[in-house]
Image 1 (cartoon, one colour):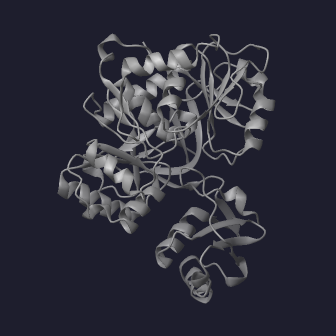
Image 2 (cartoon, helix red, strand yellow):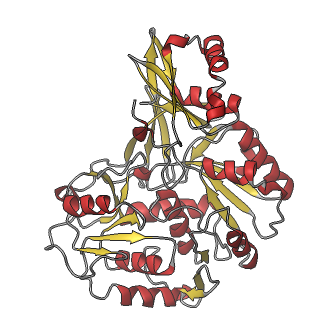
Image 3 (cartoon, rainbow, N blue to C red):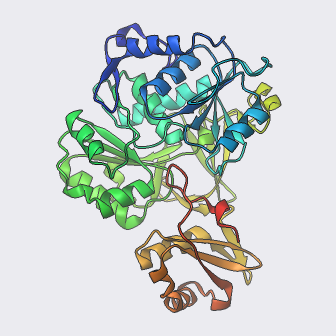
Length: 443
């Protein structure tokens, strides 16, 4: 039985709360979903425009139960992307505000195991999707439940988009355990968000590095009274060492758990985690493989093995007929190494390296160093072998420190000023999960 199937023992438990603090049992959500999808035949391909709300959750779970493969997109995406997805994948139905509920395409063959299609972790609105099976979803779900120790008493709040693999994994894993989810699209800056946290006794939150920058540097979460909150998780990129130390110390001193995790959409969400008791000892580490997974380093690249590895990619409707081309093996594209205790560390993206004067330069390392020195997230680095390092700055005052940056880079990395190029922009482009979208920066 899959986590989205109807489990009799969960029938009367509360599955979720909405932003108005209304509660819905598992049976309520099952019935609501059945009603919302009654016009959709089993096995249809459906494009669902979703948000963190009751109708989206009900519809999504019902479609999985009907073995209807789902393309998930956020409801606020540009209309042109919806049009592109419709033309590329020819879904039988599009569900979302302003879209027809009637059949829009004829049914074409789909692989029996196909359950979900998500944008790749590096997506910038491109049509490329990751093909995930029902078993992929369930195996990763079981793994997360095990290492986080999730049970029916948990009450997470949605702090990430539903269409983002990390945000979706939070939903999956808690439903699997019969827990209750607080559904909201409110941001950390909203007073209503923190009212929900308090009134509904939220026990856990998830966040990407950008989330923790906001929570601890701007909102000073470590000074808040949050009596019911006991677990914090982080994934979606590298957390700065000083911030990991700050969050880790706060968790230790207040009897909470802080999990640093690593994953990709191509692995259905999670591949490794850092146990809370190692948070301060292994700062910067992505930890150890999740239960059921295995990691190897091959030519410096992290390679993951597990049943949660996706079936493969899709770039057309015809690709949705394909089976498992990955066969449980994922070349992550991340350069990594392991310490003597078997804990893994990411040193950068394989594609985020350039060569300058015969030396290999990691752009992630330069960017992290620069953000730390300038104490700002408003600066990022890109680059090419022929041009050098391009520094993008979204703060006028930081441009005034150009000479200082050139000196620092020359002294620490041996990169001369002629290989540094500065561009002032209005803002750093980020996706809905807070990750920098480097493709939108140009050159």
